Length: 213
Image (cartoon, rainbow, N blue to C red; front, top):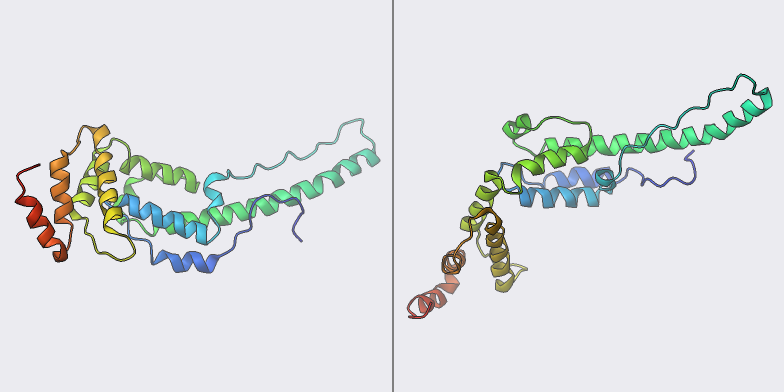
């Protein structure tokens, strides 16, 4: 029976977590942003995302009988502690299970060479932080990732419009500025043009023949 007053969500949605794994791209070093988005989505759908922000429950300190404590008083304290310990056991088991599932998903969606370069740890939160430190911030790897995304980005239509596509590329370019790798506006425009399909060829040609920058 589950103790009342439990605040940690139950570990559920295992089927959803497993089904989402195939939607997570393998982290290869230049696709961290997309990989992290898919990881977050998988954890949310599987209802285990809480383990990323919730620390492992701490075991309550068991009561110790005082030398002058009566049998009745001691038995009363033991009875009071029993539901506290039961609640901890349930919460701890839920946390450990969710943490184990999340770590397994993460490690199985990363290139083996990258996994080997990341120091192992016990919690999914710390493991994600170590991965993030390798692929974000001012690191060369992150800069390479952003540049590769910019030069390989392609507009395919679909659900997003051309405006959203341009904003996405502009946002990627803006992340290079703090690393002293800011792109000139003219260069970014040509990158955007290069990302457009043939349907936009006439528009691109008309722009290029204009004398104004």
